[in-house]
Image 1 (cartoon, one colour):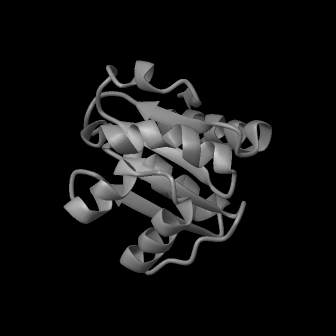
Image 2 (cartoon, rainbow, N blue to C red):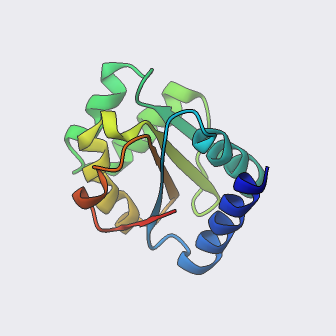
Image 3 (cartoon, helix red, strand yellow):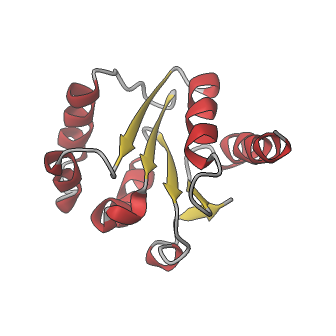
Length: 138
């Protein structure tokens, strides 16, 4: 419980200080509660959220991030697939097991720059961090 509280406090600090200018990356060992904390935070601190679990999503969802030239198409498709309405600056998108979707990881730079939503990335390995510099690691 102390671990979750500490991470949760860091996520709150990120949300308040970064105001959509960066994504946050939660990384660490498997099965320690990273995804649970991210989803709990999203539920409590945002109006709506979408959880994209790259370990379980369709190839169509994974392929959305191959072309980031039309972000409206990506956001519309995510809303249709998950049945959740995203609200500008009031919603967060969680990329769980993001290490399984390198194109989504690379797209974070463009998604963050767009500024409509916040992004939380969750990864079970440490080797993805160098791919994108527009993330803050917790």
